Length: 51
Length: 584
Image (cartoon, rainbow over all chains, first blue to last red):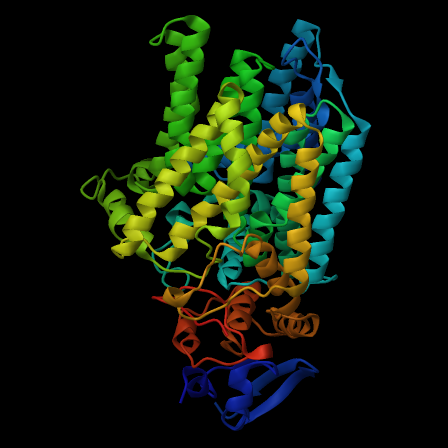
């Protein structure tokens, strides 16, 4: 798995861009145990819970 | 304090214009352009001196220094009871305005308005961060650590660019929200430098125009020149490099002023000192051929004027305008252990000249992403350049020497490239200077031809523009992943324009307005002790971290990812070896 996928859950927040390759490829991993704190049509910010 | 500093700068600028430089009336528009460039160099020099003596760089201290110079210049003006008189051609204002509109138009196509972030490389994100760090700090980034940003020390960044854009950020700094929008200052400053590039070049060429037809020719040549290599540097985000090109133009203009003895000897010393200091601290790869050419040129000119080669005056000229800027530039940019003696309070010269050795043996082998064209862009510029050198060596010798030395330097780098000592990246950087020299000489060659036949220069320019339009409409620059397979041919005489058009119209944005809004929310709502990661394309990541000022030095680990296609499945012409990321 690419680096950014491994960082999911190990950081407090993940900024994602819908245009970005990584977000679309690793969406399931990145959004696990996360809630969206901000979102617009271009992307958003995930906050990881249960850390 | 920002307003007070701005006022001192404006008054200093006005004093510079008022100071009597010559008895003759001189072109005010050229002096204004030159004044801005000298101001950039002056700012960098003052900050250089302040950091050397560990005096903090604050707007208060800079304002006080400006006031001191204002007082000195004012006393001089009052004592001499004379101010400089100027002349102006109203048509020049029109042409400069049109050049400005052209620059704004390409900037708007590239960035939109409000600005979105779009550069062809990821480098500008680090340059932006450099400007920010200077704006937030109290000195040049001399004491930056080796691994500050993605394994690179910010100490290596060129001061001329980040000092000036950073000072604007300092002036505008207020609260956290206002500093978030500093990327607008960064982009705006780059647009201003592009405009100044066009303006300075036109002013220089117009100085040779004896009638409005020639002035129109100067305008056309300036427009063609600016939309070529300078625009390419702008689109790639090489803002320090664009400053270097701007300084080169100012040096060419100043050489002409010196040749015509348009200003006093002391004024010449100051101008060339500042410009050559600026050149070293903007892009020192230009230094070998420019300084060498100026050395020979000054020696020759002073020999002609004084009938002697080794005179005190000649020595003073060479020392002040060349040796001193070289020494100052060298000890900051290359052997920084010498510059840092007072800052670090240690004298450790055990590694003296190790950096110089690294520079020659390793640094120039580092690859990067750049537009590469070995000869075809220059073909149509050669005939009239040769005419200008051959037929009017007397008037063009300085630029001719720079051109010849530039070509010899390129040949040397080309040989180094074949032995893997010099990358395609560093080889190609020198073509930006060659373009400037050849456009200047082509214009001078057209003027020589104009005296014999008024139609030939017009036919040549029209032919060039027709070729340009055809290639823009129907041409397609070859963009390839494999540098060694580039098929450059002699018919690609306007390839640079086609490449610029492709970048303007087809390159994707790094960050759109909506993506910037996401970062704004993060800046305002996530405290600095929280860890943030960015899941985006590399350029999005680099810019996100720079705007949020949260550098993630592990970012390059995820940047080495597989290629992703984008529109029309094109890959850019680039060099591949040892880069942080692939372009997709």
